[in-house]
Length: 342
Ligand code: PXL
Image (cartoon, rainbow, N blue to C red):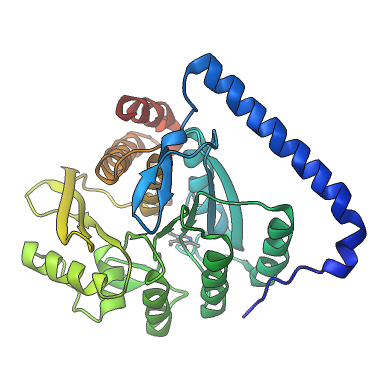
């Protein structure tokens, strides 16, 4: 597992210069915040600091939240980072990326190429540490290997303070099957990683693989609640199942707050179409909403509504894309939907 040592001897002579620079930039940031406060009477999205210990969102005085998302870059295919970056940014949240791999396309295409970037995690994170960079949330999606998950766990420790939201989408399977790159051992590792999270958002297939539960297409509320209880035992604080339709023609999320023991749910119309990357759309909007200070319920509702709206828009596209959704056309609605909930 990688360690992030800082090479103090090499850097010693530059430290005082660096400190002065950083001090100056902090002062500038503080002054910018103050000017903003005096002009608008509030900080842009200052109410969304997430306190891990107290599990509350408290006021923080950073005018724009910064999310780190760790997942692959699929150059073509509209998933992972190419979805997270535009959507979270459009929601007014800075989006930093740590690419886990570069693929020519996502893995539903044939003959895709892959360049694993695990060896870049350590130097990139070391540089961030040296620069004093912090994150308000760390959001992980599709990862490539157990080794990467170990490094991600380390990143949670290094960059995940009390106020940092850890949001894990354990992307690895759908419709009862693991994606081509993964096996059951990978699912077991994903289950261990989920123990570190504040919020996890598996679909039913992923939840079944992580908890050793038999997968069912046709399920009822008792099955969903049982699955949530098993997920809760993995250790995350809030566990949310996506793709849950308990009523005819409905689809949505069903979650459990493991501290209060309360279940919650939200559903929208079921749209009879399946596209890659819709889970990434849902997770990205949820993270963006939480960073903008929305409650869990409002963030998930916004994400569910936006995902349905985007699937509908995609179905209207005469080109009939099969590999990803046309989120580009619905970004204005996302921004409006967010504004209505703020
Ligand atoms: O959207 C999930 C996803 C992310 N990244 C890659 C994928 C997939 C789903 O197939 O292949 C590389």
